[in-house]
Length: 184
Image 1 (spheres, rainbow, N blue to C red):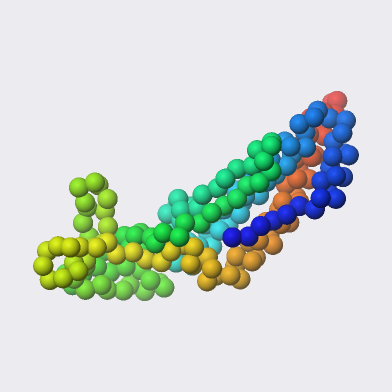
Image 2 (image 1 turned 90 degrees about the vertical axis):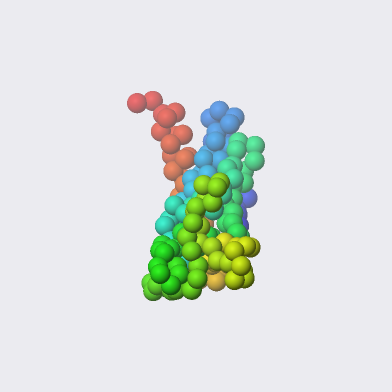
């Protein structure tokens, strides 16, 4: 993942600007700005990864977790799951010969595979390990973490945008506090 740091000199300047306001104004500004920036980075990362592998953004977003900043802990982060995505999420369809799924805008056939719903309610693409009935294993696609590592140019772009968005979000939060405190 990447890390975005805000300059200590700029934080000191913010403290001076907000010294006439209530004590918790700076923590409020920083935590809100960090959380908004992390949320925007998660959205952009989800869209980028979904576009790279061709699945729904919602399926990607479920695998990206975000920890939020608080007034005391000025750190927010997003983490991308390294678990491989079930093949059923790639538009898998049952055919007479097996299962087809979307890969790089083409349909790929997996011979002798089948789609079924397990007793737990989980639907997936499975294949027998041997010619006998059992054991079977679920087929999976790539890991989002690996896709993120492979798409390093797009990831670096998101990092640069997030850094500029953090500054804008801090500025917006300061302006919000200033507007609320000024008499109408």
